[in-house]
Length: 342
Image (cartoon, rainbow, N blue to C red; front, top):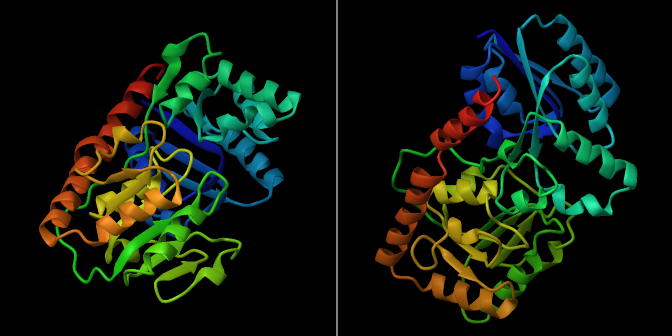
């Protein structure tokens, strides 16, 4: 089938989206990627494939005219756009798609909790885009309840984040005990984990590394046991870390969590919505309360694990990704969504 895909309104595209681009390449004849930012490796990996057309610019006016030009020049019979419902310019992208009779898939990134805090006009546009799209792609179960205003619930598809399973089974030189790889955003609570580690360092020696302090607010906490950095590509650290920590309001589907488990890191997380659909306490990771004492108890327990127990739990973490959160499962679910109207 002669078809084209437009990824429009995506603020950035990173390495975590690579498996999605690979899938789209097998599904569509042409893929137009129009975004404000992109990981250089993504562009490098796909730039030689004739199906991909990358347009990267922070200026919305530039992206608007590029989007318009691509739509006009593309002669495909079937045109689909995967768009975000958020941002002051999203209604423009939506309107263009409607004018050109482009089938619209809306992707819910996670800001759905913030809709009520937006102005009336922004809320109206968001609801309009959701209501008149062909399909809605949500990444976490809680989002479905938040979309109860959609009359046709059958057009909502739950497709969680996934990763491509790694083949190797062993890692060596695990010199980092605890690794954190997430922005220190409002939805995350790194201070609780840092305070827990400060308490633990009074009894134990360890190495912990935090990647994500973008504003350098926590740099004064650095010492021999705790190292806090702005941000680096995490993949080198996955190879030599034992445990992966993430805390916050919601954790289900966190890309860094899935990547870490895929490498064999044992996750340590707090209780949150649907996290038990990924982590089984004591089997493939650990779940605690989101407070200093609870994290401290789990961190202390983990650092004292014997080697056999550590290896078993690490193996189970990788097994979880292989069986429940691999890219083949994602492909099948996205097939169901797209085939519903292609």
